[in-house]
Image (cartoon, rainbow, N blue to C red; front, side, top):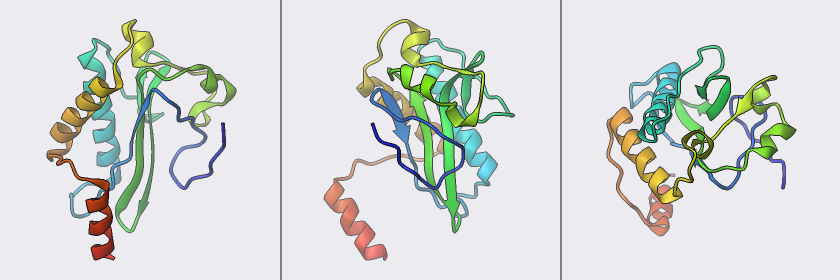
Length: 161
């Protein structure tokens, strides 16, 4: 396991297999979103997604992300540079929870961390989790996603710079 320093909001976090990490790159000005609106929408995606498996997740305005009781189910850490968002959210699907015991997730003490698997009491296929998140990202952000090959994306990035 390695520790990687990144420029994003929040304190320490853990990313591992079984966690769905979504890092949208959005020009917030063009999307007419304020930073707090963007964070609210990321939380809403996770809340709606958790509901798919019968889990009631909620916001905590003092500690962003989504929660089931005093246990963090999904985290948000973002950076905004020149009005463009980087990083985003990490949603605990089937992630091993033990590594969270080694840190104070998001710099918070005395909190637990949970997963969809633990709360639903069964393992969720990651392919299903990706589809659920995609569906709610499209609905909450009022966009539609198209599949694109990595080579086409690289070509697009080269023409925009």
